Length: 337
Length: 133
Image 1 (tube, each protein chain N blue to C red):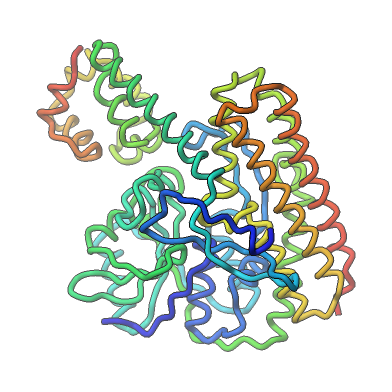
Image 2 (cartoon, chains in turn yellow, green):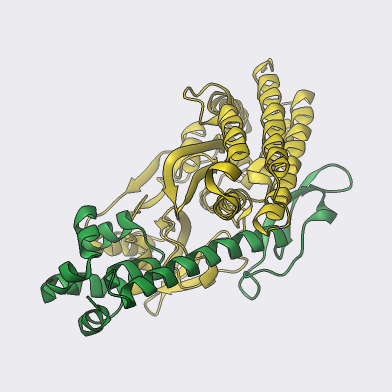
């Protein structure tokens, strides 16, 4: 069967799944930036010692699963989320869900995802897609980062649902429990709590590796990479930083542009001009992240080799940290109506 | 970023999809638009793949010289790390590290070899042949 499901492409997979599923149940106001902002999606963390693909563990957005969870919570929409130990049960559960006429989101690994280009297929297990039908034993797939919908055989879908390693999806399936209409007032409140959550995550997480202080921490580390790692390894590390920031699924600028878009849209619900002003500062920050990426490319392509080049790289991050700190401080001063 | 500055460079996503980017239009309003790729990130991806290629050929050299078992080589070839191999095969990480030694690997039962063979998508026979220890 083919369900009536509208596939809208998005910059980030979890935003896209959240937006498309919520629109499907009747939340017509939701957009990708709203889902990202209400879900307090903006983040930064550099986890020292942990290695991902033999490089540093860096993220520019919140933990996988949180955007969907928080957005639905804030809008008062109950959520169903299930993991499975048995592959058969996992498939049956999905099939039953489709038979009942409703789509569902799955968390999947990318390594065996056959419709992705080979160059992008790493063991990354927190990708999200929507299954919206089954025809001749093939599942119809709405992968939000792809322009067009696609399909996977039973075997192919099972394989990616049961990918293993870090963040193994364990067949995870999730969806909003029931059709819900959401009032503009609810959106208004959700925007407010989303921004408050993001202020907390970016300014007040202790430990010094997350939020604005995490960006500063990374800046200091980078300045030492040339001496501590050598040029080649430092280049590989910087390339990883750029990939986390700019790879497909980030919207560019390490999600800062999506957040700026969110604040503009938030202004339609809260007529507070401060939101527009702060939006511009996230644009600035995103632009600096992009300039940092160009600087990093100079280093990993071997064109920039001096310590001063690494210092410049670190200084870009310090500049972004300063802007984001000020921006979130200003958001925290807003008197909400 | 302004809409007119959204990069339209060639990338590995060509023939698969374009990606959504957020940028401001002439009036300062954010819009979503498509990008075919950005040279800066294409080259970052290239750096990652060059690193993988180096790791794979290092592991292959070690395997051919009898200094490492096929487990190391195939782990690198399949872009895995120890925790990932451990999760797929069910072996402990320290056990897998022991299996990196050609002489230890050479004594493994067919049943154990089968677990590696399935994950690495090769036959048990091939695994045995690849081991030079």
